[in-house]
Image 1 (cartoon, rainbow, N blue to C red):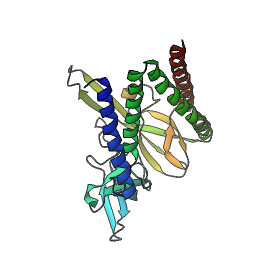
Image 2: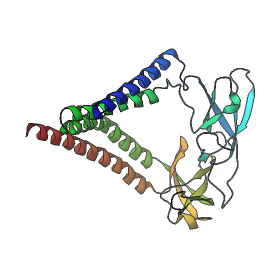
Image 3: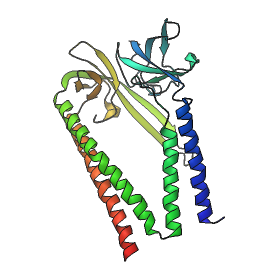
Image 4: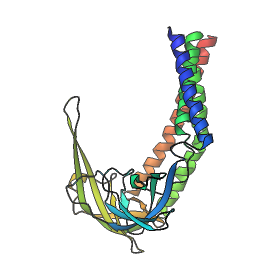
Length: 289
């Protein structure tokens, strides 16, 4: 089997996967559609131990109402329980998901989630079909078709998302300007050590934990993973925390750095459009040249 046959088989297999996925979604039997999505509230927050591990996130006790029995259920996020809770306070609303009929297999999300149709995997399979078709066209006709096939559509895709990226940057800038500020303290520095199985190199991850109280009296404990100088030596340090009143999980210790980060997102989007468009143009020039 030559390259053309292999690519045709690739496209056919992933097309079948995509069709099966879309069919299951229409039938309402995907894993996402069989997941029960609930909203719980944090009842208790356990302060992390200085020098401990960040694995598992901030330990919390969460209560929710069982939709079947109507009874109150209390659970913890100890162990492997989905998304890490990295910002916590008493009364915070979080999401709890579990397979239908298996409430003991619950998983946490940082926010309650809307019902999903489970289209992520079949959509990715469809993208792989597209990749195969582009490469197949390059094999059959000429390699510049690969440049056109990838550069043109990706440039259009990035251009379509540019206005949303700019709006997000502007909204975030307005949110930063409206943030409240309060004094906080680094109450723990967590340390995790991992070893690369290939070369034996040791990696250390440092995660400071900051505690602050909002002007509304909400006591927040949160991982502070960015914009904090010398995180390894931050234990006990007093810091100024800027937070959003409606959602204290949206906080920063350096508003200027946050603004620069948003500007970088817009710059990256613009550069992606330019590079992809240039790739497509180069492909056209090779074909007509």
